[in-house]
Length: 119
Image 1 (cartoon, rainbow, N blue to C red):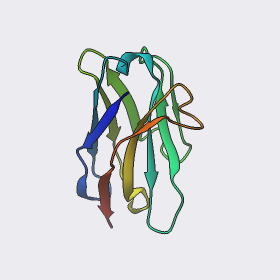
Image 2: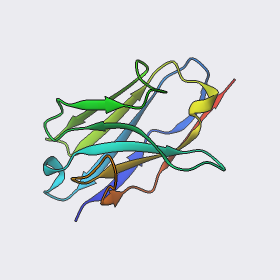
Image 3: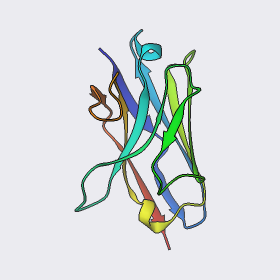
Image 4: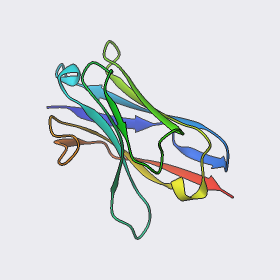
């Protein structure tokens, strides 16, 4: 069992930066690929980024590639999402997720953190 708690969301102007954190409980953290997803009002939840268990392999949605960076610290049971050059269309609730099939069907989800980018 893994419990995930996101933090770091907030209001930022377009072009600004935010860093999201996701703290995980449970000893199994380092066994799971981790990911970030987001959901804007009236839209379906969409994939943002994922990272392998060792923090070496990463993959990004085209919409955030070159602007967002996912990383993890297994010693701290934490995964991060550094978001730079933010755009109003990045506004959404951001969710942390974990599981062996992270790309398709994560097993565990956080409660989400709101990111709002003003123009």
